[in-house]
Length: 231
Image (cartoon, rainbow, N blue to C red; front, side, top):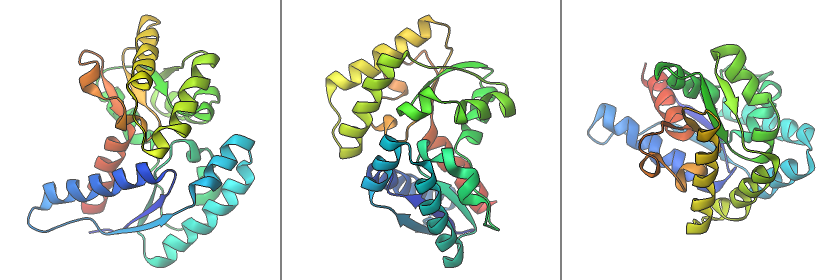
């Protein structure tokens, strides 16, 4: 079994979910008492919040490079970053490594194309929705067109992520707001929706809109990581 290095802490809620799902997925594949081989480097989430709020992506890249190199030295065979948002600096923090990063977009986009879809909505933090660093990868590598909410809705969704979901608060009004955005994007032509922040699947999921394919980036990332680890 390959050892998975996890760049975590952004947030602790998402990191705990990755830990739970990775171990469960390995046990489902191998049975018995088997669980995943993991090394987790969990940051102080206040750092990530500061980088995102201030747009200090150079600081994010420098810090994550140090953490990624530490995971490689500790024996990780490949890396996961538990944050869609922090994939903005993935090229920088993987540059000095000799081990690969399993990019969060790739298994998600593969699932979208396998479902026969090419135009989907993307929900996430403000940087994920308002800039094109993930959207470009979906489009250029997989031919997936991305729709996002209007700026005012982006602000509300982002605030819910940081002020509620990252603190373990899951409120009915916030769930209703997310689902209203999903419905509005569907009306604009989205044939599926990417839950493109790793805390969002803790708030909404496929059961909330059974007829609309939802692509849980955590679950798809975990499935791909386990396949790689056991392959």
